Image (cartoon, rainbow, N blue to C red; front, side, top):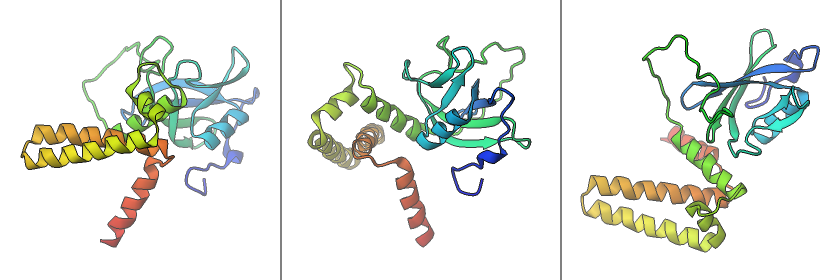
Length: 213
């Protein structure tokens, strides 16, 4: 892996059927979501599109996770083990990962622990959900209402929520500020998706500013 986000496919050892097992993990909770398989084409598509695509051994064809359910997996990192014969995929999971409507396919616990370690990727998950609404509209969705009304409506809402944040600040109300800032963040994310601006672009800009301070 010489470049960020790019792996050296020559290091991957596909089995006699041209497949490699893939462990899928939530980047938000660190929970293992599922085990699947990829062939070279599925791996190439996953890297190119940033959305998990697998190979179905039963159907003997490619399948993009969430293609029918809407429960897409947006890839945040992809790595392979020391022997090159298995892949670890860390994803933002939209909806649930398991066809049984469970978040993880591994829900049959034998031994459990109360230890819970989580890292927040809420913005990434919300952004992914908004992007999914734009790609696959849902009737009655407020997000789709905004997209249907277009840029002017979205900009109007961003302006209104900005004003509401200012008013809440002047009122010295923490709870009101939290509510209005949340509204502003949401509508700003809708604007970003509408205009094709990714969260990583904002992160890079902020990192650049941090380095200059």
